[in-house]
Amino acid sequence: MFKSTNITNYLYPILTAIGVSLLVNILIFPEFGSTQVTMTAIHTMDKALKVMDDAIKLFIRSGLPSGVEDEQSAKAKEIEDKAMLNELIKARPVIRTVLQATKAVLGECSFEVSYTVLPPSAIKPIASKGLERLVSHVIALVGACESKYSLVDVYGSSLMSVDSHDSSNTQDDETVRPVREKKYGDKELLNFLLQR
Image 1 (cartoon, rainbow, N blue to C red):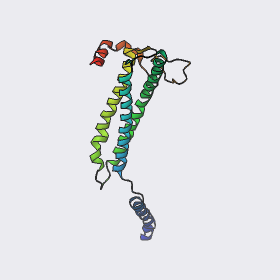
Image 2: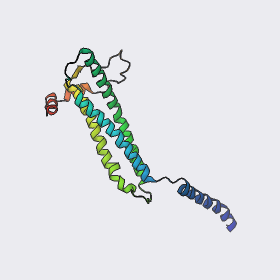
Image 3: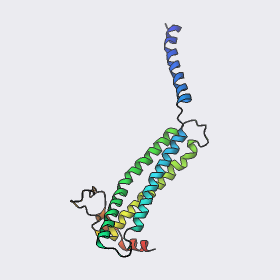
Image 4: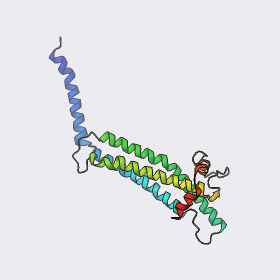
């Protein structure tokens, strides 16, 4: 029924294609999983640390009196802080997405056989739990900046309101949570914590 020539007619091209594919992937275009995991983890840390640095700068400098300020420089500082807060709010989903991409790369590379100095299994604690904690703390810090503006009224209510004639401000009312923050937030506790 089956002749050996029929089997070899189908088997030889398939085995040849598998062999050529392995040779090309291993010898000509090697892609090491540990390099990919490391690069995505570094990219995630870089994004998270940049957002954290901006949030810390905004949290510390906003609302602090800087000596003699005229009305124009106070308004310029308010606009700059508003833009910085909007950028921080927009950065939250970006760092979540980058974290998910890092987890996906780690999951993809976890089953690779690796002959490197730093295998993916050694990077796993950093790339999974460590980055997850870092991103959650950064998101909480951005939320603290948002709470500071809505509770303490650093610039009055003008920072949280959207001006219709201001074309540079594209945030919607759902992005910043001033009503909920003011309703359920404790202004005295926040002031106490800021003074410590």
